[in-house]
Structure formats: structure tokens, C-alpha cells
Length: 310
Image 1 (tube, rainbow, N blue to C red):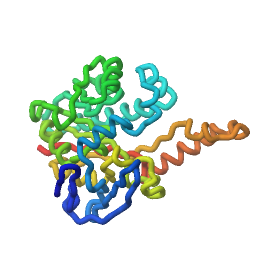
Image 2: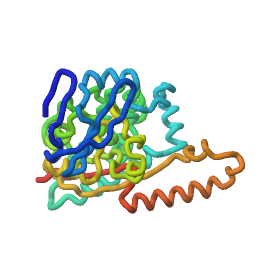
Image 3: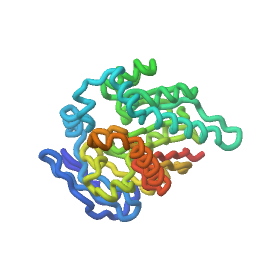
Image 4: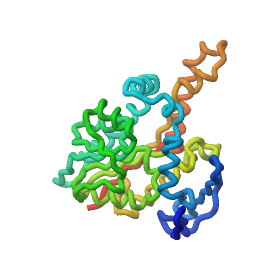
């Protein structure tokens, strides 16, 4: 790895140290982003990496990629209304927390895992709220002020305004670390996963959810896939590459889930008036098709659960 004052260059795959080849490039504003693909584990990544200062300026100008939400200046009420129309975060939170609880209950021997749960980048608080309901003692991190305020109203927690890199916590004191839809953003994935391992007690669970580089939509659309969006997203993982990263840092991969879901508005906005009576059939057919995609392990999002080795 080489650096200059503005960028970081990887000369080999940062996950498995294999060679890589150029994959695609993408123009965003005045910047051209090159993405490389590892020949060993399949990890795809923006290379060279933008500087942290550049990313902070970019987020201050453009937000995290959802212009619609940024323009509306979200409130708890507007966030809850969006969730009512498309309960994506609520469903994901219930499924993910249920799986975490199940994995903890399967801990071997008489080992009892801590009930302390760290939600890294908690956003509006849907996952923290579900973890609270499941009986976890939740701590949350969130840098964005509006998200922290909404999460506080939703959960009663006071999320810490800290990056994960700067977060201070007693080593081996946590039972769960959750990184939902955040690892794709970070500059140094090795630092994050290694730090999570240090914070977890033996047998603790690291749960990661992010876009699937191996999805059918990415395979069809290539760099035009909406999740391939540098510099907001810098890391593009498949189950294989993410599993390689976890194993590298002392985790056993316990479970992988594939999740595909589309809001009903995707079709309703594009449906001509004469076809609206058949929309229920369209939604049913789409749901069945997405279930088939997930069954084929080509889903849009993956959830990977790693257990820290004893």
C-alpha cells in the first residue's frame, strides 16, 4: 500500500493480498473512480482510495446518496411514514436481531455471552430499537446529527457522535457488534473488522449487512448497478470476499442470508392507469421472483454473521 497526501493506493488486495485486475471506472461529478477486482477472493474496491478529508467534504455537499431523503429534512414522523409505506428497515431489523439471538443461544458449553450490543452507524434507530426489544443492552454510534436526533426519539438512547475508528470501549466487553449498511462506506475495512474483534468477547457475534456484489442485478447492470456508487460506496463485497475478510481477523462464519426487496412504489409510479387493476398480481409475481433470486444466492443484500473464535 502506498500513500500520498490525497489518496491511498493498494498494490495488492487488502483482504487476501492476491493480485487484482481493473474492473470498471465510473465518472461522478468531476472525478473518475477506478474499481479493481481481486483475482483471489473476489473483493472489488475503489483504488486509489480518496482521502478522508475529501470524503467529509463530499458527504457535506451530497449526503450519503439518498437525495430524496436529504431534501425533505427528515423528521421522526416522516421517517415513520416512509417505513409504513415500505417497512424495509423494520423487517430487516426483526430478522437480523432474531438471527443474532439464535446464534448467541447456540453458544457452546456453559459459556454465557455478554448482552451488550453495539450498533455502529445506527441511522434512524430501527435496528437499535429491535435489539432493545429483544432484551439487549444497546449502545449506538452515529455521526449525522439529524439521524442521532431521530434515533433518540425512537429509542430513548443518546447515540454517540463518534466514528468507529475513534470509539473507545473496554476490550472484550461486547456480545454483539452490528454493522448494517456501513462497511461498504469505510476507507479501511481491515481496521474495522479487527477493531470489532478486539471489542467482542470470545464467542461474540459480528453481524454485517451490505449490498451483494454477487447479486443478479450487479451481474446484469455491472457498474450501472445503483449500489456501485463511488465515492459513497468504496467496497463491494460478495459472500466469498466478506467471509475471507472475517476469517482473516479471527471469525468463524456462522450464517449467510440473502435478501431482496423492492417497494411497491417501484411499479406503481411507472404503471399506466389502464394497468393498475393488475398491480396486485404484479406485486405477487415480483415477490415470488425475488424469493427465487434469494434462494439462488443472488440476492441484492447479504447478511453475514461471524463468531469470534475462542
